[in-house]
Image 1 (spheres, rainbow, N blue to C red):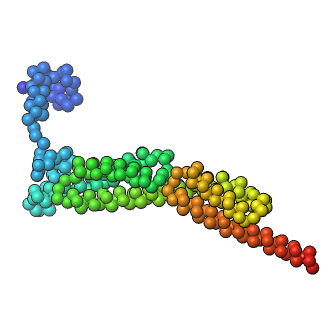
Image 2: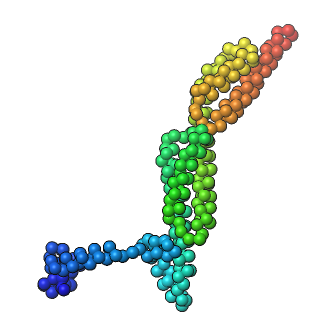
Image 3: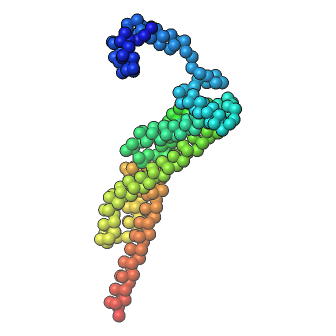
Amino acid sequence: MRPLTNEDNLQNLDSMEVEKLRPEFFEQMMYLRKTVLNRIRPKQIDGKSLSGAMYAGLVHSYIRAINEGAVPNIENAWSYVCQSECMKAAQEGADAYDATVREILQDKLPLPLDELKNYHAMGKDKAMALFKKKAIGDQVEEYLKDMRRKIKQKFQALKHENEKEASRVCSSFIIKEFSGINKKLKSNEYKSFHDFERDLRLFNTYFMDNGPNAPNKRLIILEFLQKSLNDGANFFIKQLQQEFELQKTISS
């Protein structure tokens, strides 16, 4: 049955409106479409349904073998498809981890290491689920190891970024809050080194209770206090030396 009564329009059939087709032809066309969609089954190999991309890869493998003068081998072609799918699954999994963790951690750094590890586990679970859904074939474990390696590298970079941000916010807090003690020291308001040392201990407690909730928090404040202790000791020694020189001058 011809789709149109006017044969002059047959050459332009692809651009014709549906309403201009013969009703009988349109009805049979829809019936054929429905029959095909209801009866067709996905192409499967080893119990795995092929997607359009996988089927295209299989065809590509056959064509390449033919062009090279070889006989197409279903096993080799399927292995090629599996490798391609596993590679894509590993990369998509790693990307999904990165996107998930970055979205969760947006504007939240720095965080305690335990909390950061929890978010890392969430991203890793999502990557694993995506990989298992898409990866196929006998080389799944090999590509799974590759994805885990990439995720581990991303987590190491994330920890470094977290520690760097922790150092920045802790240093900013310390500089602001320690200014009063530093001013007292430079103004000779401390009667003894013991008084200065007491304020350092109090500042340590204050920082641990009120400072940023960051990884390596204790290490950061201890390094700062050690430096401050040395600077304070040098300051007091210098003051004593000046007083000693002044006494010598007076006594001469």
